[in-house]
Amino acid sequence: ERPVHIVHQGKVIDVSKSKLWQGGVHMRRHHAGKDLTTDLQAAPHGPEVLDRYPQVGILKKEEIPEIKVPKALAWLLAKFPMLRRHPHPMTVHFPIVFMFCTPIFNILYLITGIKAFELTALHCLAGGILFTVVAIITGFYTWWLNYMAKPLRAVTIKRHFAITMLVTEIVVFVWRIKVPDILDSFGIASLIFLLLVLSFLPMVTTMGWYGAKLTFPIEEA
Image (cartoon, rainbow, N blue to C red; front, side, top):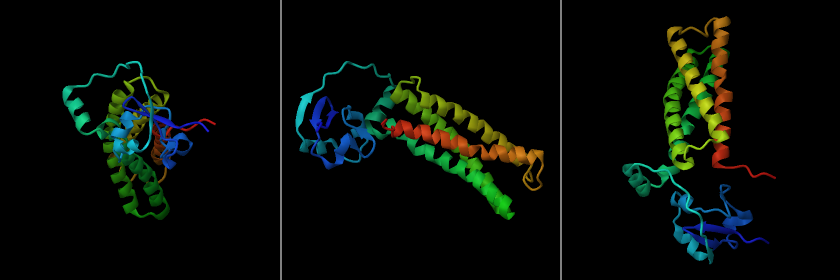
C-alpha cells in the first residue's frame, strides 16, 4: 500500500495512519503529494494536528515567483489568511441564487397569474445584478492573487459567461422597468424577454460547474 505524504512548511509528513486521509484525499478537496501550507492557513484547525504524525523528510523546491502585492494587502493576508482564497467562493453564491430565482418566479407568475411572483423576480434580478458585479470583482482578485492571472480554461469560460450574463441582466432589468407589463400579454417581444430570462439558468449553471472544478477538481479515472 502506497504511503500518504503531505507537505507543510517544507516538512514531508506521513499521514497514512489517519482515517481522514484514506485514499490520499482529505475532505474531498485536499490531495496527498502536494504542499498544503497555504491551504492549512485557511483550515478550521491549526497545524498542531500534524504533530501526531511522523515527519519523513524535507522538501526542497525551486523558488516560484509570487505576485507582488501592496503592503497593505500583504498585511491583511497575513492577518486574515481567509482573504486569500475565500472572498470569491463566499460572494459567488449570491448571484447563483438570485439568477436561479429570477426565471423561476417569472415562470410561477406565468402559471398562476399572481403579480407578486413577477415583482419578486424583478427584485431577485436587481440583487443578481449587484452581486454579479461583486462576484466578478472577487473573481478577478482571486485569479490575480492565487493564479497570477495565468490563462486557465475554466477561468476564461467563467469570465466570458459572467460578462455576458451581466449585460443580459442589465438589458432585462431596464426592459422590465420601461415595460412593466411585458409578460402580461404574450407576443414576440414577450417571448424574447422570456428567453433572455431563461438564459440565466444555463449561464449560471455553466459558471458554477467550472468554478466547482477549480475548487474541487474531478479526479480522472
